[in-house]
Length: 121
Image (cartoon, rainbow, N blue to C red; front, side):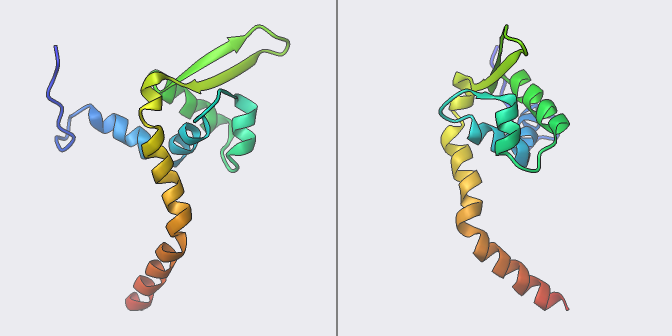
């Protein structure tokens, strides 16, 4: 049965998904997985500043939401790769726009923050 979800309602489960997608680490992971599977340690090296614990937790949450898949290879040591699922790929364009929007507009954001702070003094 299909439910009518309404993100503006307090108890709507869509808010949990929005909360996940609003997390900077989740966005960076999803953006990094665009195009090819990536190993855990490679993600950790590419996304500087993320701890091993937070990376692991975020990957588990994204996997639980069906946005990424985890593949374990029986090597010594064990190799684990993460990839976008078909559902996760539906977010590729949106995630890319959000993550790289910040790079393009950061100078303008900083100027706006400085102007705001100057008015507050």
